[in-house]
Length: 255
Ligand code: CO8
View 1: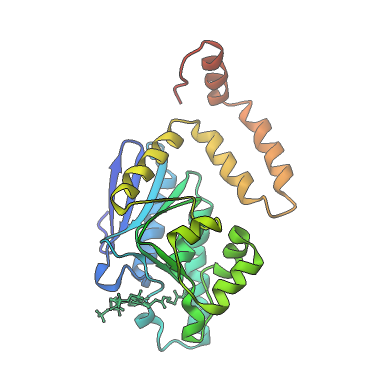
View 2: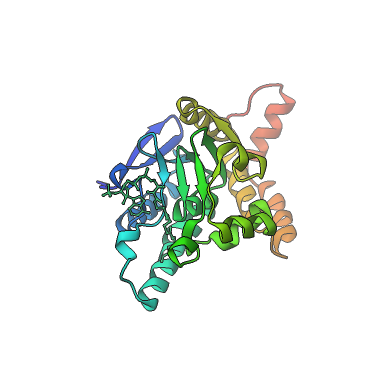
């Protein structure tokens, strides 16, 4: 498949998706959202892909938000449609992938960009990263899930502060409040993300898929039951046989 706004490469079992609109600081226009959604659909059904990294091209920006130029003259109906479509075709899809998605935040992660990073399962950032939800400066609020995911990651109080003030925080502060897991030099960001992806990819893909689902349900009243169901289901699978047998035979499992 040919893409205009993203580049896709493979390293071992990991697929790296790079958003390639550096001229707009990798802002998400509708075409980019569609392409991201399409590649994720493809990868979700591709057993050779065990982990995904999403990053931005260039050394300045992960994603500087939704493309402001594109929605500048939208009315209420179009804007609601854009937000709903985006959440369905990309943001919720990322969160519900059956394989882990790591955001390698290599610079600005603003508005829809931070919302994309927050939809990912894990966030690593470079030292130059700046994160924030500046929508209120445009007279808007986040529309790609930011009001929902940020409080879950950092708590309501900090989320309110970030959303109401629109201030950008640096990578150190983002790590301090749990918005990103680790901070690296820009040079190390992708190698470290790939290293994590490879570690995850060496584990049982079935178990990872079930873990993603159970963790996603952790803030609903279905979470405990989902964990129990997944736990039971995995006992029927070859990965569990291989994992447990390998442990007993004192060797590495081969999933
Ligand atoms: N959309 C479109 N173009 C952008 C965006 C963006 N979000 N961000 C940057 N660009 C473009 C600039 O217009 C500029 O283009 P040009 O060279 O043609 O003028 C180019 O990228 C470089 O940007 P700057 O010259 O501004 O670079 P600076 O280093 O001076 O500033 C900043 C970098 C601080 C990141 C600055 O570009 C900025 O503030 N960008 C906008 C950030 C923002 O407000 N993001 C939130 C957007 S709203 C949003 O994401 C809502 C999500 C929910 C939508 C739901 C659907 C309705």
